[in-house]
Image 1 (tube, one colour):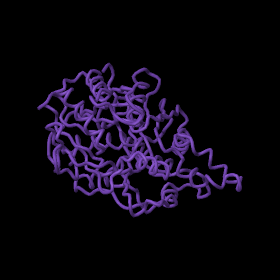
Image 2 (cartoon, rainbow, N blue to C red):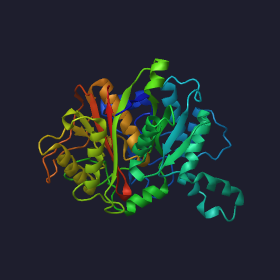
Image 3 (cartoon, helix red, strand yellow):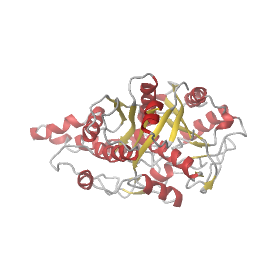
Image 4 (cartoon, one colour):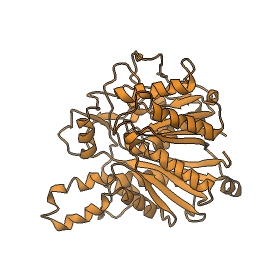
Length: 399
């Protein structure tokens, strides 16, 4: 890359922890966050398991010290928690001291509130104020307002690759001199709409998700938020900033195969990984670990596995694991939380395990890492693939 993109801060909240440290402890100890639904009303409670954050909206409001009389959505609240930690982690005291932007992403947006009042808007006009919170951009503006950010704010919604594309966009804005630093990532809460939608698609498991297992049945939905602070080399040098990692490569492709399914030959995933490697200037042999998309759906894991073999070779695929058995599939936030996990893997020289794996898939000879493994890691490739064929890959490096 012509200019390094430094990562100087990170923040996260997920079903396995309310901050970076708690998430790392859970990953290290093998403690997953998949459980019965408790935080919202649904007929699927006690039947479908999710990666639910066991903090109510009221508790989040108190933690963030917000006015209790507000219409802030759960998606926004989770995003505020993660973005605040990322900014503090980066040691930023003046959010507007440099040309700073926020590129956030979401797929659920404010559905958790708008669906709640759907049938009463006509009878209770005072509830129509909540409709404004529905669109994806509302959460980004709420997060920016909470941070006191006066610069550029933008929103990306490309389903499950959203946060990866937000991270890419932030990097490009820095590389082209538009901004000096960017807070990038994604946030999504659970909602009835998404739970019912994925259930209708018949891609939810009736138990715990088992990525890359031959007998995988489907995914567990999750909720989470994660943000990184990207900064230019100039700012890092001027402020003598500690760098957590570098965004060394990225790629985005779309195989336009199907509204929800990945192509049989993994073409979109293949092209995204190929482009990320090209931008990074790394050889495929330099990749030490792959944080796979690994949703545990029959289609995705097969398609991603084929794509990895096409990129790396039949018996040369780097060690890999999916962390979605820990958190569930957090939709637009997935690439954000997995970027944080990838940085933690590099910082602590460990590969986090692919939980629940028992039987190798019959279509190819690929076995994920199933126990916490110590390994020196310099470069991580992280995949995130979304509905509509939108495939994105990030490469994170120590230096």
